[in-house]
Image (cartoon, rainbow, N blue to C red; front, side, top):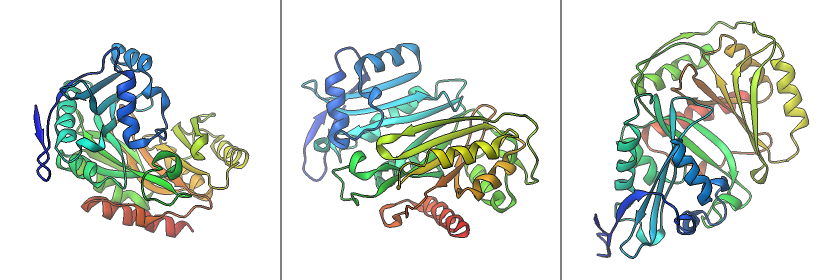
Length: 340
C-alpha cells in the first residue's frame, strides 16, 4: 500500500501483517521511537510473550513494514481479563519519520476489521493519551465515544520524557469506547447526582440502561477487590467487582497503609451493576475519590471511574480533548471541585 506525505512528497510502500517470530527487536525499536524506555508494560515489548499471546487468541498484533523490512508502525488489540467481552486497542505507534502519511489510520482500520469479526464482542476501547489529539480524532470519526478519564496515572519523566510536559507532573488518558454486540445493559446502581451524565454517556454509545439511585447496604460479607501497583509511576489501580460488608475497612486499610508516595494517585473501577455500588461510592467519596466517568460495556459488569489525586494538582493545560471530550472533562472538573 503506497502512502505519501503531502507536505514533503515522501512516499512509503507499507504492508500490514501479523507480528511473527524474529520481529521482537524491530518491534521494540518502533515502540521506543515514541516512548523511549518509558512504556510501562514491558512484557508487551518481549517477543516470546507477544507470540504466546497471539497464538492463544488473546491478542492480535499488526506491524506496518516498509519495503526494506523495517517495522515503521505497530498496533494491537488485547482481549481483557478484568473486562470480559471488551477488547483494548494498544501499542498504537508510528515512527516519527513516517508520521503524517496516513499509515496509522490505515493500520487502525485493518485492525478494527479483524477485531470486530468476534461474535462475543461487547465493546472496543482505547485509553488515549490526552496530548494526542490526532489519535482521539481518528477514533471519534470511527464512532468511539468519550466515556471517562484515567487521571494522572503515569509520570511524564518516565512515560514520555521526550515531550514538552512538566517533568514532575503526571499524564492522563481519555477512555474512548465503541459498542459491540450489546444494546441494553440493564439496571445500574448510580448516585443521583451523576445519573444524568451516566445516561448521557450510554445514550451516545447507543445503549439503553436503567438507573437506581437508592443506597443499599451490601448483602455479602467480603468485598471482591483487586489492586495493581505501578511503583515507577507512584500510582495504583483498584477494581471493585463486588461490594461486601467489609468495604469500608478494606478501603481505609489500603489507603492508609499503602500511601507511601507523596505524589501517589489512585484510579478505582467500581462495578455499578452491583446493588451496593452507591454505598461504595459514598465511602470512596469520603476517602477523597471523585467521579471521573465510566468504563462501560463488559459482560455482566459496568464500571464507574473514580480518581484519587491526594496532594497532586491536575495540569488541565496539558489535557487536550475534542468536542464531547471537553464537555466530559468540564463535568469531571466540577466533581473534583465539589469534593474539595
